[in-house]
Length: 396
Image 1 (spheres, rainbow, N blue to C red):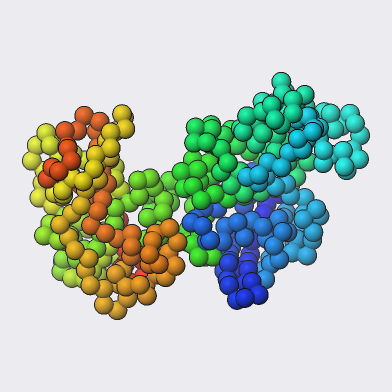
Image 2: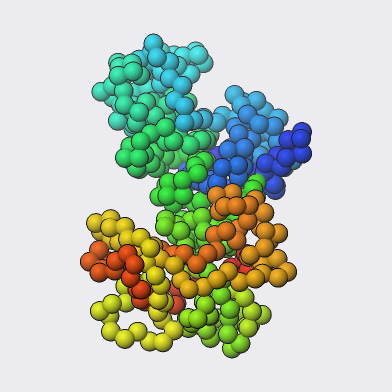
């Protein structure tokens, strides 16, 4: 059992490409830390540097009190689980799980005991004499985890272990992995591009973009208080609605096209009065205003409905507002110079996430239909505001 620490860790390839830049993270003993971000953000490179599979350009990696920069992967006392199970097809489940212990020349009784203990934790006791070809995808992944558990390592590293599974099995297995990790109680770094996986599994989630750590916190804090536009747009499904707007001179209202929303008093808004801001609203903070009586001024938005998705327990209303992209002089959100290489946010700029489109999550009995001019009530206490020049959240 040990902590895992990354201190100002960077990775620069010989061609000058910087995959990871100044990464600082500490994973506590027993903690499940999820690294999440779009493809190419550096999360897998960071994991591989901890594992010893990638050379560290700068910084320090510690496992417990040991600096492991110059140690081989075998010497780091770390177990890895990959998306490719890499099971030996001619061996039984019992033989696959205990193979590393057999190579280490552990006594047969010790191997048998540790394999049986791991199989009990993983729910594989009844399958120990089966071959991998006789197992489901989820069972094979549990066998791969069993190989890691029996080694009793100081830390686990998992690189997208569920990506080869179908959607239903992924939901089941992410619950299983979280349960197993808590029972074993080993510091774990889990890499995924799936933000739902990250939010449901991690004790903490580290959001990465273009090699840089954007924010690291408990999942609910990331959701409720994103530090910047990237985290706001990346975390949440459906994603946060983001709109360019203008703050009133007194800071009490924000204008989106020809509509206005009232704002609660926020001391941090003084520098932005009369200027452009980016307004964010989560889909669940918009509701169908029909049948709710007259809403107070500044607490509703009207929009044209494009698509309605009926999901049984709720409806997702896709709409667009009558607003146009504001010009962004000096590198605002509309400027490609503001945030290059924004990964999944599109078209090479973070501003691509800021549009006139949006999604509302409403009650399943909502009567809103495609083509309607719908009115949505807005929970203005839960609006998010961002600096259009830097993307940083505007807070008191």
